[in-house]
Length: 144
Image 1 (cartoon, rainbow, N blue to C red):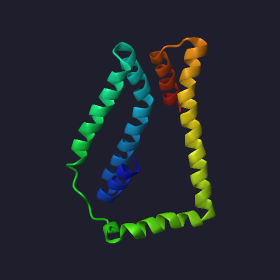
Image 2: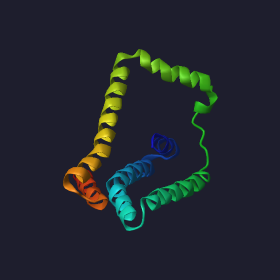
Image 3: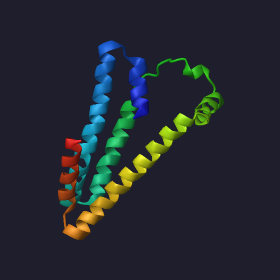
């Protein structure tokens, strides 16, 4: 995701950049909202293996498409990998950056932990099917 945003930001200008960044973020949001219900419905109709198979085929097709995108010169290629890592780890010297990383880490751990255990809880306590739980996630995602 960050690579897509960086590429669009470097490769495009003006309204084309704005449109591309908006479409990338919209696609990510729609995938989050629709992915769980569609995947759970597919798993319930056919098999959970089909859900992973469809995701895998989609990923392979995306890789083929990504291979056709031309590289762009940003100036970063003149900096060695070692220097880039030194700059990245140098960020940890700043207190505010450490706080942001810590908050982001715990937010994501909490979110992913909640989402994965919420399905088990709803199935165990209320007997809900995978597709019904997927609809709950879709409703929550569309409201957020």
